[in-house]
Amino acid sequence: MIGKKRRAEESTEFEAFAHSRGQRLFRTALLLCGDWHLAEDLTQVTLAKLYASWPKVRRAENQDAYARSTLVRSYLSHRRLRRTGEQPALGELPEGVAPSNDDPALRVTLLAALAELPPRDRAVLVLRYWEDRSVEESAAELGLSAGAVRTQSLRALKRLRAVLGPQTAEQLAAS
Image (cartoon, rainbow, N blue to C red; front, side, top):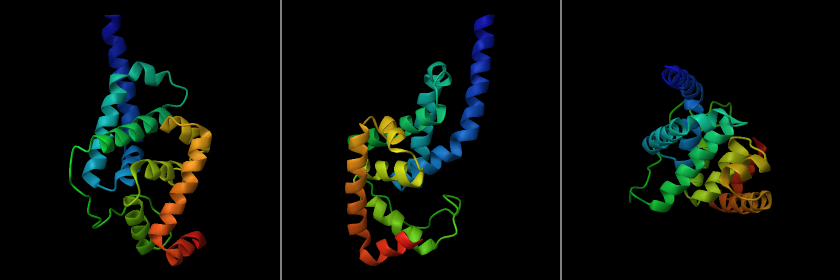
């Protein structure tokens, strides 16, 4: 009797967690992979993994960091496995991805440039600059040292600037 009640409470807690964090996880997944459908799949895989280990997750000091770390690792694992030969086409972007007052054309250019970066570079940039995570938080979520995150951030930014070109990079820096 106690076991059923406990499982029901845990399911209710997880549902509340998934409902409150699902959109943010999806947005991060979309930024990582650049493909709406793959982002949905990654979000579902992440939520399934979190549900399977919910007793451990609910005791975690920072459940959001645990969820992001699971998402990023799922994304990197998917990229390593290369189960699909499909290339995401950067077509029409959803309006609700990350509301901002900046230029939509510049945002599309930035997302296209991110899509050209290797998966780990992309993950570092999304966590550090889009999700505004500290070096230490990013390192924990990626399973790297803080020094490795700093180095990879610098290299990834350099690659991103090369893909964007000097004019667009200056335009981004100004906004």
